[in-house]
Amino acid sequence: MQFADIIGQQKIKNHLINTVKDNRISHAQLFLGNEGNGTLPLALAYAKYIMCLNRGETKACGECSSCRKVDKLQHPDLHFVFPVVKPTGKDKVVSDTFISEWRQFLINNPYGSYNDWLTAIDAGNSQGIIRVDEGREIIRKLNMKSFESEYKVMIIWFPEKMNAETANKLLKLIEEPPSKTLFFLVSENSEYIISTILSRTQLVKVPRISEDELFIGLQKIHNLDENKARQISRLAEGNYNQAKEFIASSVDSLQNFENFTQMMRLSYTGKFIELIKWVDEISRLGREKQKAFLTYSLRMVRENLIINQKLGENSRLTDDEGSFASKFSNFIHPANAPILSMEIDRAYMHISRNANAKVVFLDLCIKLNVALKKQEEK
Ligand SMILES: [Zn+2]
Image (cartoon, rainbow, N blue to C red; front, side):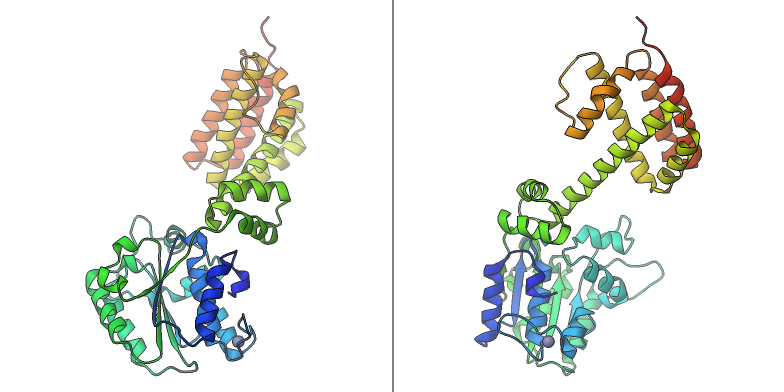
């Protein structure tokens, strides 16, 4: 993670770079802001810059042994503390219990949220905590001499998830730090951090990413066209994680639309070889996606009935959906719409109960074939 990999936040990057240049790196800093604004990536890029053995004017070299180890999150002087859950049967749980999951998580998604992390470690309904064992672990690590770097850096992600005892141990360390030790606390909500720690850390407030910077970032990282990037950067409120959710849901709705048109076309024409191919494909999607597709299909049947009955505008449809509906709505009428809805609903119920997806979708298509051919009662 280099400063250049982080979307926007130029002012903060300049500030951090200057602290290194002017040799006034504060030993305890609090990166405060939403995860999607880039708090953790900034702390990480800062650490990399500080630890680089061949530092440039504004960036780490990216090639020295230190940069390479930081990239893999395996530098012996770079330590991480983060909330974890207690696996059943384990007594002592510290961050390092989950270090390989953490590395994978952070490398894949440096903007990842607290909830993403809990999902990554299969936390179920448990909340992540920085437990009391961690306090002892922090002291042990920081009492070791630094191995390769001038500084030891400890990044503490979500210090607000520390219990009081651990927080007090950390406070002592921040008050009387071992030499050449840096603490970067990365937090979303400073209200839950004890005030004595807050008053001893220098605040690096990480604001929302500006709309223009997010617009540029989205085009670069996700290859979005200009319109889409503009639209999403407007909706995402300066939060890259939110932008990614919008991108994912628009990809899903496009996929749902394509599957819906295929399912209806193949069911109507009764081309069974193609139909079975399509059923194979949709069966490979996960259950949640299949359920989302069926929910989408229900909505499409309803919208097409509304158009057929001239009960309203098709303004709730996208351009593609609207142009498909201009013809398809002729086939959806009061004599078959309830049957179509009922069959789709039934398929949803079977998928929810883990029935075999191939059987469910093939069965659904046969029912759709009959229903679509049903004549409108005049
Ligand atoms: Zn380097």
